[in-house]
View (cartoon, rainbow, N blue to C red):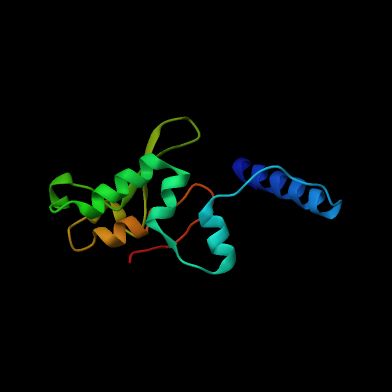
Length: 123
């Protein structure tokens, strides 16, 4: 199991033990988590309470009239185990696919969230 997955296992174990023993757990989940549990669609506006910087960036991408000038590709920047920057493709051959005005909705919808992948629907 990769190292970061052990954290999720640990948190799940603690939450499970708290529920099993009838203990209160003082914490909260984001609105998108509750929506996923209820089977409701997660929309872009839900990201505002989770990470306002990501929300603002994605909102500007959607509202921009000429996103072609930004030279974005279907990748996101991340860091590897050594702390070096890497580009992670959001879809197959993502580094070779430029974001255009026609596919910017698809680009925003493929941005993964830190704890789990979600789909973003636009009204």
